[in-house]
Image (tube, rainbow, N blue to C red; front, side, top):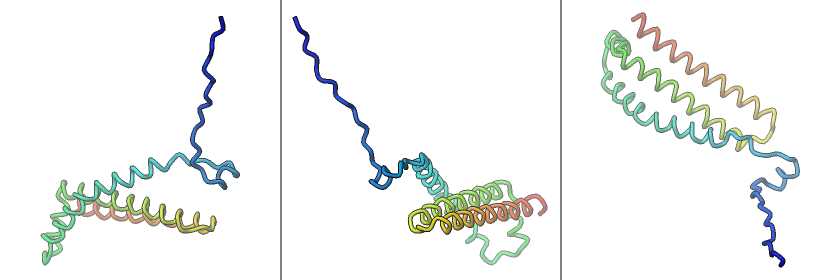
Length: 139
């Protein structure tokens, strides 16, 4: 008695790389999904933070310096300002990174711009956090 076996099917993974990518042996950098999600997380976090920020600015319209310092020095407001600054600069860095990767095709210029954006966003976030801390802690 002979047993008939089904032919072995070769399971192939789909290769979504471009022909140039296959020829060069380049694959995924494995960071696209993480980058996508962090950009969405910062966007969602910014929705209530921007609403709070605009509300705070409108409530301070016409206020004197002492009143503004008092409002910023409140713990909730200082924390919210810090979260706003961190989320805003991180979101800006992620968005600019995508733009540079998509539209700059000279490698040296791309790397230079990525470094510039990273340093500028880090400097902006640190300066904002320093100003918030100085107002909140030193009055």
